[in-house]
Length: 268
Length: 317
Image (cartoon, rainbow over all chains, first blue to last red; front, side, top):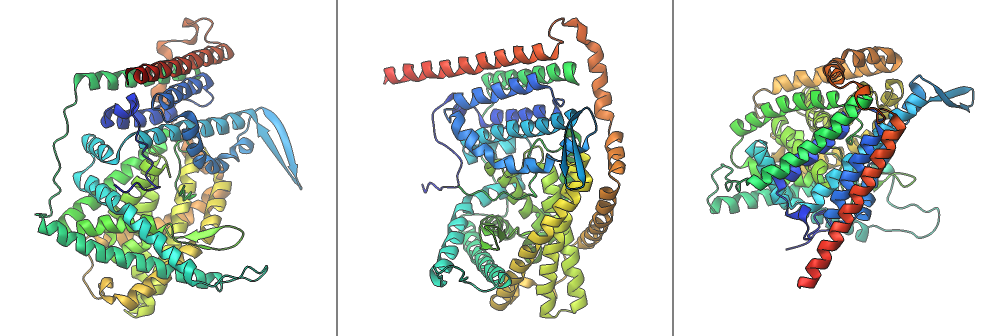
């Protein structure tokens, strides 16, 4: 099989990799929901949730470093929450005079900001572990098990199957563009026309990509037809959910519920 | 590593639970209906087409062009999908794209996916459809209507969707409306220009090579009038509401205050176990220390256990 650089799955042998995808899927969503429901500034609960997700990262063999490196991705978005430090009224922390404006930071505002950033950081780590420890077909199975419509799951599957093919196609188009475009190494000499022109030419590439996708989908349709496709999405029955699976699922949910209650009782 | 961080994909943690759940419900209702329509109206031929086009839109987001100072513009694709597939199928295609981005590439959160789907699949498609068909009607079937209509639809849908994202953040108390709305709107008015130009180029290319893809003169799919009206309503509502919200942030705070039912639901829980039942730990700093110690022990135990397991496995080999 063609291993593509985009696929986040890391094939390892670990208890987390071996866990049924349905359990992982439900627990990941439950973890993110728990983080979301935990009141602001409930720091002990945040620390315990972090301990849980770090433990899972170690257990999965992915390593903390790998997950944390990928988790940086969501950081820039924290900028959107930065202003709350100054807009929420409360106990004054410090004030920042910029020009004729004076921004006053409050303790409550800072607490809100750190809470949001921390929750986001916890959630993305859980999502990364799920994607890195579960193969996509298993994820599709999990989605089917939790009741996502078959047509949609079928679409996800088809999209995934041709994702790498079309990404390669897009990269080829870009490489061809680079190969055929002049480029001057001389400083101050720009190449490639105006921004609007470049954008329109990129549009041409996108159109070309779509056209190839159309033509490919025709071929795929014919190939599917020749193998008995009749418009119905058929799937194998789901593997049985053993009692051991139920126990692990329940244990995870109980742990998360306890953490949530702990947070709500003391900081809610 | 490919990482198209787009300011429109809200990560988890930035939306309050209530806002996330409300938008999940709205998205499920709209997309559920779209799914029904697609299942009913479209032939079996559409299924592979939609899947491959979803992959193409994802891949198309890698096509970029340099703008200035290291920034680049790239394609989001809701408008192109709407024009080429029709609104209902486009919603499903954009749902697939956004879901895979969230699930596999962590581009946008899982709990926040409901809101992201609403912004990208519902608003993106509805506003695109409304703008595109309106310009089409004005152009009376002339070719320029397709290109300008598409470009305008791309720009409008992105700006409106970003306003929706800003209001969702403001409703969650994560970002004040008087900063989030102008910031998100302003950035996307610029990003939208790139999207509009790329869409223009793509449509011009497709029109020159495969005119048959545009279904000119074909009857509109069933229920598209509702989408047209919905697109108009959303665009009008957000175009009016967001400047209003940003000049009167108190109004939004009032709305946020009205959502007190989650808090109300929580209140009986506090009464079950009042703070003083657990003497000692009710002290915040002590609780933090205890949690920290438990956390460290937990992680340490797992690390030790894994190391032990590994050693055992190596020995057995």
